[in-house]
Image (cartoon, rainbow, N blue to C red; front, side, top):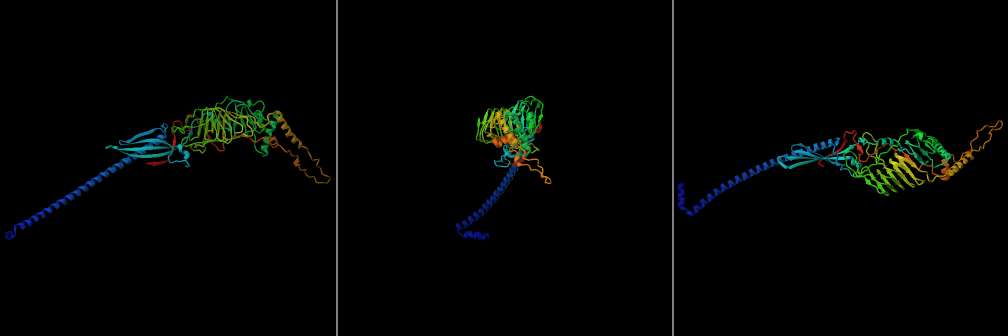
Length: 545
């Protein structure tokens, strides 16, 4: 072979042989380069896969760490919510403006705020009126990465709770007594009620009380009028008497014309004796610049009243004035077309004159375990309330007047109807202006009435005996012999058009209520015990709202 090569080398041209040898060398070099590239490619892939695996592992670790911090933040928020609820029940709770914060661990903590209301309630919802009695415990939990203080996970929990009313705030002792009566008069002052006043239910007058003294001014006519009111009741013609039950008053002070000891028995009623006492002072009316529903709760600002209050509808707003309180520090006049649902508080006098005037008490949540709504008076007045002539007024609720509650010179154009309690220093009802005021006129009316009674007393029958052997029939009474007007009030109404149906009606509430006096600066509701906290019930629990 070698000899052949040498032979070929010797026989082939040199150039051709050299070319072929170089080509073979290059082919060997190309194969070695491809192998290196292949190895490098495999190495790159391996490194890439290793890097991706390391990245994935790092991401997994980071995700796990983030999840752990998120759970720590959520646990902190839960711990804060529970702490906030406990604090809400404590006697020393700092109120809705307070903030509660604490650490749960070395790297987690919470911050709790209290928010009045329930953000899920909107006007028109069935429970919207409960908005101010709800509170939202807003707890935010935080968890920090120890290795990276700027990396903080957060979580939020909100718990909505509703107040469980256990008690109302302390009241003056006189108030708890006064609300037991339809009409409670506090001051020692002689008073007069005309015959068109009617009080149903218990009433109390601490001094001399005159009934119908100014009209009828004739004693005989007054007595007959009152006696016939009782007769009309017994005969089924309605009850127009001034009272429907006995009246509590001091008998020793019932002296003189038309005193209650004399006039009540004419109407089939009695005067029950009460011990003489000094003048009882009703609670004073403070300055109501703001009020609270419960200790620590939000402060609400009462609405304001114009001196001439007319053509207006006033009522509560669950978010801004939930009790519907409207306040004035000076005298005001209430005139036509005033509709109030809530409470008017005035430190001075109130004069009422006009038509279409309506007051209605607002039913507030009852005390736990009962169904009787809590109510505030519809009117709390520091001094006098004067109702003028031609006033038409309906009150569904109670009135507290620090001094006098008076109907001043009213006639047939005046009507007043009240379902509630009147607690006042005095109650005065002037003589009815559309009735006669002169003694001679009343005596003439009485004489005319008695004359028509006497005219019908003639006996038209005889001996009534039959003939011998005849029938002994009973004699029938002649209907023509009955008087045309049997009762003096009926005679006055039918013949002369005088009003006899009571124009001023005081009746107890249609259903039981808890009537409360909320003093200025005091909340409406209070804990059951002075050293206890409020009670709440959980309405809803919201994670990450």
